[in-house]
Image (cartoon, rainbow, N blue to C red; front, side, top):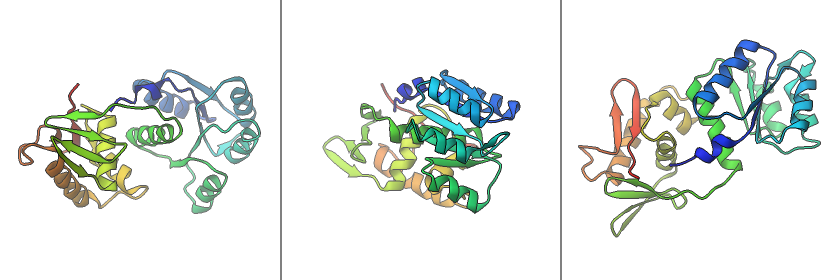
Amino acid sequence: MDYSFLNLKKIMLVDDEPDLLKLVSDILKDHGFENIVIAASVKEGVEVSKREKLDLAILDVMLPDGDGFSLMEQMRSFTDVPIIFLTAKDEASDKLAGLGLGADDYIVKPFLPQELLLRVYAVLRRCYKEDTPLVKLDGCMIDFSRAEVIKGDEVTPLTAKEHTLLETLARNEGKIVTVDALCEALWGDNPFGYENSLNAHVRRVREKIELEPSKPTSLITIKGLGYKLNTRK
């Protein structure tokens, strides 16, 4: 699935740790995000968000002149840009505080690069819609807007988990998506222990999309790593 239009979105990173700013910036740039601006404090975050036309803000909670929550509250007086909190604080009260203010997501350090990317893409997709074509595979097409697999005259519905699984793979078409990243996409913050469930979903998806499920050509297992989806132009 082509989500390349999302890579044009402008993202603000706010953190007072230069190494973390570079890490997050490098992860995003390595995956096509070039419109990145940075700030190291609440004051700078307000100034940048007033000066730039932002599409997403990723805020640390602990900042030298306040916290990410107060920054978000100030930003909300002049912008509705979606916000993700990225912080080392994992206490439930902090997470609830951030989400209670209307944040779009909350990621706890340390994090996997793919987890960050999946969450960034998920927020951007929710907030910025653009029509995308049907995803073509060997012998079928996937219509994500209707959650259906079209194979000739046969139309097969996808469950919510199957839809999320295929959408995550399609967003990374031709690239390996790790088991951990897929479990995170399907089951959220505590994905551990779901590998057998993931395998079961993969088997059911193959029954729906593959011409020969026992010899898959579209949803491929990469032993010891994860899965990838091969699409056709």
